[in-house]
Length: 207
Image 1: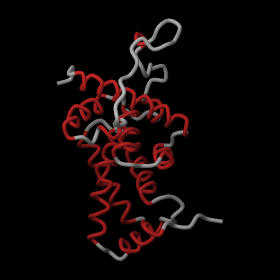
Image 2: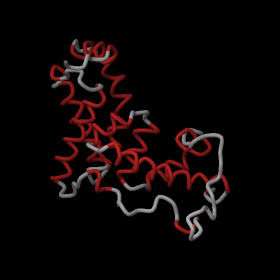
Image 3: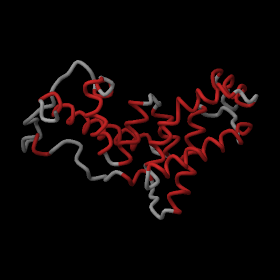
Image 4: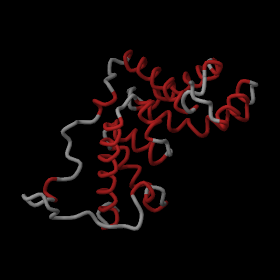
């Protein structure tokens, strides 16, 4: 039996199909930034990413009748975006499988922070909030955004979608064609690097 379209998505799609420009503007405002960040993982420049996103919005409006509610609306839009970004990446001769954008042998934590026996030499500092919450604090945001931009493309995209945009792991896996295990690894590695950056920030090294 096919999955039932979620009421919010169903109502929104109905308004979009009726040509409700206000609903379309709200949808663009909600997703445009996230889609651009995803596109950047596949294409060579911000300008190219913006063009891919614009093409995606055109395709979304043209293809609304094909949305059957078997996934969330933003997952459906995300898949359209990724397909167009991959096509653009092929033209730029730079596209690679998304899961290959982050080295598999990358150490998530610096080896020198452990003793030979495997115990912490320099344990992580404890804070009241997790990094995905701290990233929203105004005084740390500029520093964290700089560190986020320096992450490998796959880690940056997964962390952005999960922690900044609030996407579920299922949505991220579906849009980026990632196995759940790979998604967890990329999220863990990205968060670990941001946590290390926050340690430096709180110790004064990054200011």
